[in-house]
Image 1 (spheres, rainbow, N blue to C red):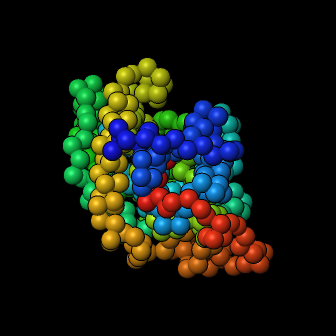
Image 2: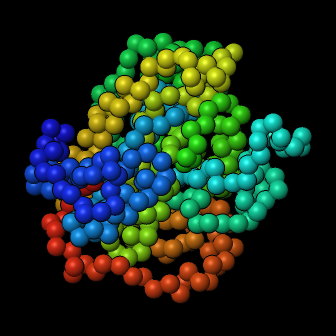
Image 3: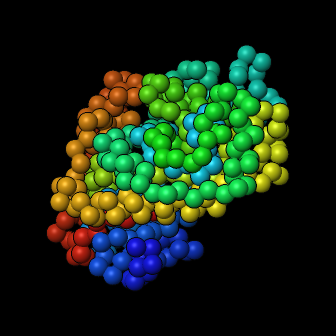
Length: 354
């Protein structure tokens, strides 16, 4: 299918990344790909432009957010393919310079409105956590597990260095497809202490339901743009997948320095991570297309789907929903404005990769 993704190039008049100004589609328009550009701002602006354009009808489209990521050696390894239930904006916090962290704190990151790393944030912005459709995620995992994943000798040699530390047993294994969650931060962080701090924030923000696994720069921004589009009935938030492939470890192996892990040692994970986006992703896209009779009307979720405010309805099963779902009375008064379905003139697209 990849050889046909450039069969049609569609231009949105404004809003896409200047580096990636076109959407590439198959000839029949069933599958398209948009590149957001890296970082939260690029992701949010690109997806907003996409959903507000009149080029596509996305009301029944399955969206797969795909990219490479760092990975926790506790959960996965180089080349692993992950599918998330939760996306957590871990760096939405107060921060002390590492040289000035108070002696009674374990990290310089403090949830907003709190005074300690273990306290739940008291100032909620609404983008802290998104929860996705787990039944859809599990179907995607089933499709992806039929792929023969790429690996390299360099990656295998590097991951073997983690085998000496029992808690990193997953890191020493070959790449596989696993369910685990993604942490979003514009800062490309690295090292054991920061990774453990954000692992703890993931646990805190999701009431111990989420499993910190991959680290990326875009996903919460992408999901917020899609959620606001779902408010306007432009997309279906229950049809979103987040797939990340592991290009590097977020922390060093035993007796390796954080600096060496980030800057100097060749981990060998970049190539398999790039290759596995396609190898696993194509199985998911093809699986949905081939079973369109099953997928056309949507996959009903068994879990809450949405943001921390309950914007799309339902009660969040993470954070402190009883407090914060009712803590924004103005939100319930906002009228849902947006393009109506009657103004959508393009042929419906079944799947978009971003």
